[in-house]
Image 1 (cartoon, rainbow, N blue to C red):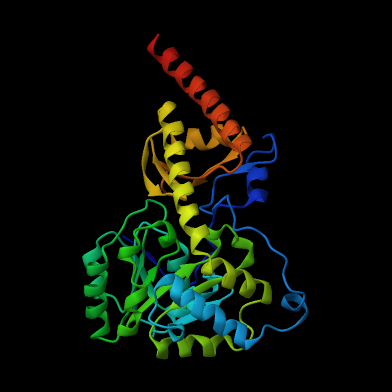
Image 2 (image 1 turned 135 degrees about the vertical axis):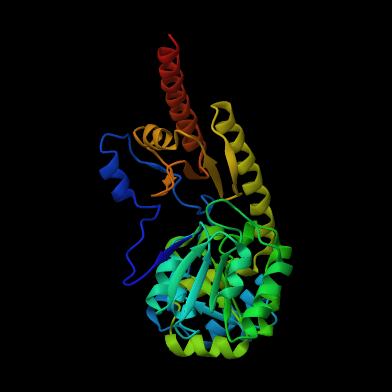
Length: 351
């Protein structure tokens, strides 16, 4: 386990092309950015009404989004949904729902949860034992987990929530990737029990991360407390329009889940051809564990293919999905070059 005390520092994330250019200044561009878990097949663009940009967002439209989100995510009602300009901005506000105490994060996982809990005044520790979370005032679980895709069963989470609720604690479940996870393990339908906040991200599955839209699902009193922190017009007009249309489009969602599963299987097969083991993940990203992870990260980076690496975990990489055929071809070519260099070095050592 590891602790995070005092001032929280900014965390390094994937998706920064500026950082990629600094790391690999001679790489061919544009980069094929596989460092995020964002869907490369975004929800179709459509013409926005001019009022989405020229007027302040209407409260009625925000209520409509809450209703659509409740239906899409399986929440008891629209009153259990609080929309925000991205999930990220919700993290410290949700952590502050519990007075400063002991925060435990099930890891290794998305590092921003530790930082957000520290901002809210908690003493934060990352633990690798699920049972240890029962000792927390604030327990945080990412489900499916980022970056390895680990799933915690709903019944275990509900039992933990009951223990925390009995002592005034809170369970936060980040379901940012549950759109491509086992939906039966989601806690969105259980939030009215209290002591549970579920976070859902819009930008990842719908491939519109720049839109900045996310929701917190909780009991109605907790939703009211969160809404009071944001005030009116929390979500921008364009985000409201895209959220309402995309979350109601069940046909697109079903077809996209099928397509992503096919792409993930194709990516696994491609890595397998070159001896790169896939150890887990979701259909939006694959989790790689190998001895020469640093060499693969650098080898592909120099060829304009950006993976996600993790400081302090040199054996781990995460790879998102390529989009157009050109990106698949560039990845295949880069892997072939890297594998050839790897095999040449092995032969040199053996001679």
